[in-house]
Length: 425
Image (cartoon, rainbow, N blue to C red; front, side, top):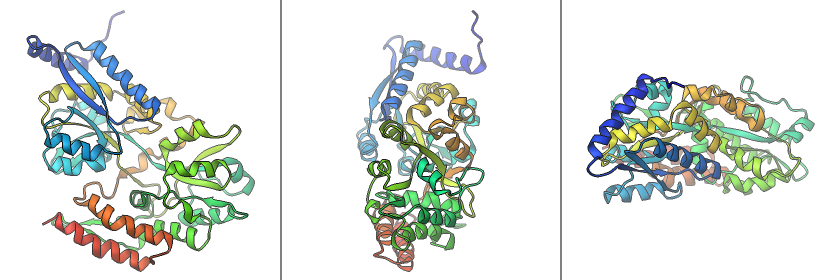
């Protein structure tokens, strides 16, 4: 059977031929690829793709290096400063700003193939664009959804939301009240990390929080639209008692035993939590995926996609980009998405039938893809410090009832702007 040679394949072969000519005296080029894949299926899919590359291209070998989400920022900073960074770096877009501005990541402008740049929507590229440069390829993204006890919802008679007709935030509050009682709660909010969840969901209500002026400086303004989501959570916990205060300091996984045991009817979680639920749910437990509530902003939701970048110090940037192009071909992007139980950013990959099945809520998540936009804090310098020192404790105190809404506003604006100002002098 004859193999069809596409222009993209010709370009890749020419590139690799060039690699071969430069490596004949010193052996194959080796690229170190640090992956943060952690779920068993995701690790297996990523390693298999590395094996397929290595079996195909003898002159450019890729070495798989296992990293960890828990320590990646500090680990990368140390490796950058020590001159030992991996050639190819797996990270998240909200972690790239300081590395990009610090000169640690290669500007991929002019290196990326047209196929890849055109396949991923502009709104996704905005998450890895800083100034005039592009410092990563966004490839996986994760909306927040409601994971619900399907039996309990059906018995209650509440309207089941769809991406076409989601609940409003007010309706969601009422449904949670209706599902509560007799020691059971309508919803459990796992808000150990409250800032990104609150800010990203607030886009659905029209919230922005960060405002960039004509001079490029960013200030925090906590306006009426920014109040909708935090006020809903606060009132569910402190007024309606339709959500327990006990889960506010919990991670998503911590709520699953209570969810399976009937204590909570719904839990707002990242889309990838479906993997744990599918594996751990008791036999006969019927669960379903619902879209997050919508407001003036519709189903808009902020995301910080997973990214692949190239180190500025890498001597083999073109070869690294060739590997990225291979790894993120539509079919391969689907394999990575299925392995991580997340959504691909690529428009071709999103069309794959495997991502449109009703089973495990894939179709609901895929329907949300067009509404995913860059997280509000995506390009804000100083955001990590603002989040850790100001926003996290302020939201935690507000949700627990120790701080009122005016107090929350004061902390976010007054204290927050003092932090951001230091990064914008």
